[in-house]
Image (cartoon, rainbow, N blue to C red):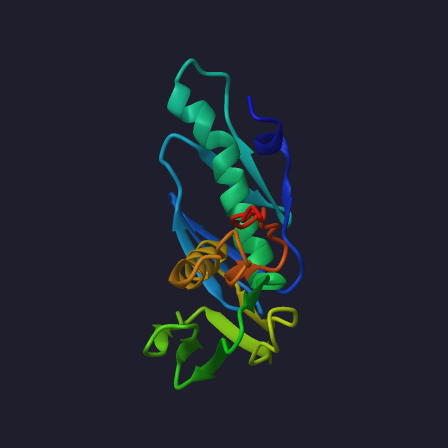
Length: 188
């Protein structure tokens, strides 16, 4: 049995959890999320706590879903109460980022600016809109209450121009380490 799945999830004040069969709706100050639980997993909501119950079973799927169910419910509660964020950086001379009309506009070395529609649950905060040389990056932060949608949008943004290993130009997560390669060495 999953050690994470055994832990109770405490429901903070200001967060409301509704259960209708296998359907869960979590509402808080940041937003509202809904999710369908797998029917073989039993979840109880009582006394401001959520408990994911699972009897010992030989069913591999049930054992796998035990910890996953608890983690997904916990992420929903954290998301609607505190929210999640991803800090991102853009390196490269002349690269910049801005938010314009519900779209994230990236000028990153292509002949045209790349426009990405921002999902409803994600907010973009641009701290430094343009790079200064290769040393000072453009900085922006993605914030949202849905962890999956936030992570997916961050991955889509990074995929527009992933960091290259020679000069480090491109879009990266703030905590990402890029392994740099040495360029060609010319002999004398």
